[in-house]
Length: 119
Image 1 (tube, rainbow, N blue to C red):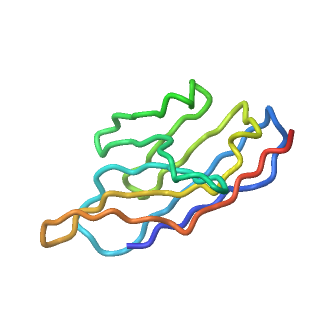
Image 2: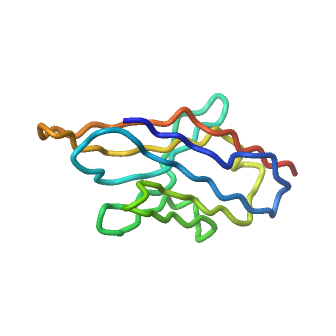
């Protein structure tokens, strides 16, 4: 399973970015897909996730600024980020809980995409 993120960029505070993640490979199904981020010197933190059925979960700090969406047919998950703040600067990672053909599910990660917000 491969996850490839795109959309990271340098943006001014108050601006917006849309991150995308595309999954590929051979597997039975993708359960939840989500986004995490890691800033320098900090632990990786959860941002948002969307289940196969469309139920979304967000971290408290999102406060309505970010929206996660998923296209099951295309095997993609996007993160629309608005009202960006300098504190949002981090490497953003895509995550997928993938169920293999023989049953067990595993977590997969993308390589990350850099988001830098200038104040």
